[in-house]
Length: 266
Image 1 (cartoon, rainbow, N blue to C red):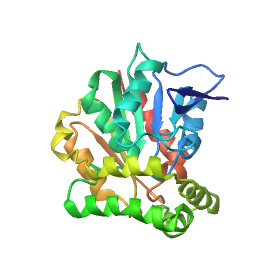
Image 2 (image 1 turned 180 degrees about the horizontal axis):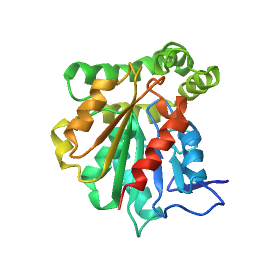
Image 3 (image 1 turned 45 degrees about the horizontal axis):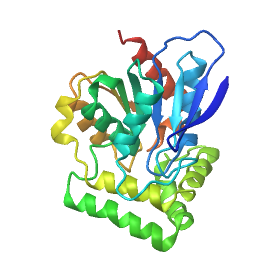
Image 4 (image 1 turned 30 degrees about the horizontal axis):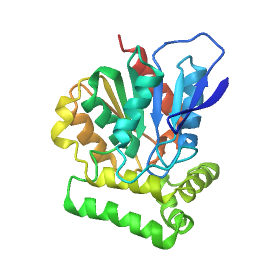
């Protein structure tokens, strides 16, 4: 297994590639959630790469080893620019968890020709579906400033995993949340608060797989069902014994579902 990090215009992206025969030359770009980083996606990326699918994990602007963004950054444009620079000759599969899935949908709507397929894990239409949800998302910015990432992580991280989740997963989730930086989180939260993909889901014109943990209490099964119902031809799978971070709790199961999905694409 080869793991290599590179920087593209201030964004850190980590490639996972197996030395075995490549199953497909179409890359998968994994986009983490609002409390994660490229490291959050690594267990799934490793399994996909081991099966011959080149996989890349992105640190969003202001997360992980990526540079902090300027206020008002267009995160979607940054992802589009990364795709165009890294894979100028072919579309990619975007695999987004939670906020990462909302970004992935936005990329597919804005530039459909560069997206071959979508995998939306424990994701949502955005927090702009109601004024209350938008306000709650923006309030999290002030909370992070006032209380600090450690305190926020200690309170919120346990809600992301299913009952009985492996301690190492719980620790990893909490550690990722504790590493959140205000510039990155602010950009993510502002994007979420102003986004409602609901009216535009019918315009998504690529094969789509929707995954959700049965115990997800953050976005929830009903929200994933709304995504699957809104996107023409989308498949929905509910993952047992998983919460909001199914890609970390059940990476083997998620990898199997993603590989089956990718194998069915022309």
